[in-house]
Length: 81
Figure 1 (cartoon, rainbow, N blue to C red):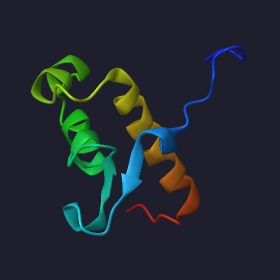
Figure 2 (cartoon, one colour; figure 1 turned 180 degrees about the vertical axis):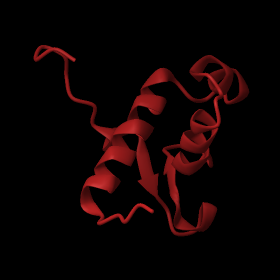
Figure 3 (tube, rainbow, N blue to C red; figure 1 turned 120 degrees about the vertical axis):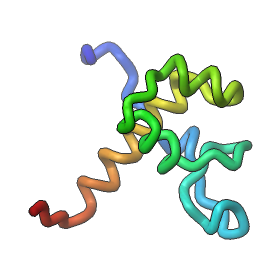
């Protein structure tokens, strides 16, 4: 990413609503969880395959999911192994 490119603001795409999907982070206007998208990508699904399966999602939603995941990891203490 160059300094001229805007930073992804994941808050524009992701929200938590207590009555939807058990309050897990979802993409605004959908019931698609960020967890589902990241899990599918992690399991080898391509972005194009994911977008075909979820026509309401865009490449920006996927970028927001990655940015959200990075933000969450930055806030948590993780122990590997």
